[in-house]
Length: 236
Image 1 (cartoon, rainbow, N blue to C red):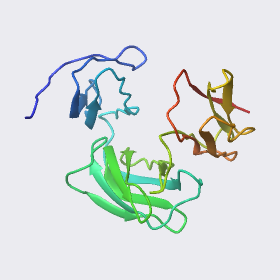
Image 2 (image 1 turned 135 degrees about the vertical axis):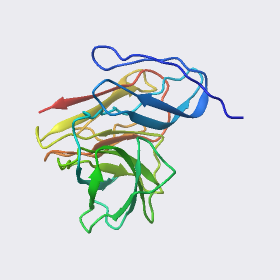
Image 3 (image 1 turned 120 degrees about the vertical axis):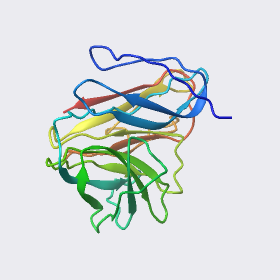
């Protein structure tokens, strides 16, 4: 049975918000602000007694118009290599997994993609290919302003991860580093990072270490770990 929920909320001065909702699948959240385009965030899953974090919502000024180009690169989550020949389907809205496809593309031999003539707004690209799980990548178009480096990370089908943290950034700084610490059975704590990529007994690993900008750097957990884990990044 379909359930209709309607609950208004406000973000704080920093753009953060927290809202309590009953457990439900496939909720849609509408983000509205005077002077900005509405953002539709689809397929939100609420689980009992679990905090659900949404991806950052980028709201676009209503004054922007026209069409532009959306470009990026798709990387393998485990190897960090660029992935060619992936199929990409573009839909309107954030986290949109079904519905009308407005553009299609294929990643190049270097893993890059480009959607041209895209109107101002928020979009979702469905990315798929042989040997990979399907990725849903949120993208943004600012009309006449071309927006590049909208990169994504796709996981192979034989991926053994329970959880994966992905760090992406821009051209500068050239080197950011992802760190994970957590408890060991001995009572000590492990530290997964560039100098200790696979700590013994941690069920974790640093898959990719990037020192030339953009990322992605990825840390994978292959088993659930009981206790407090800390994830952070540093700049050399």
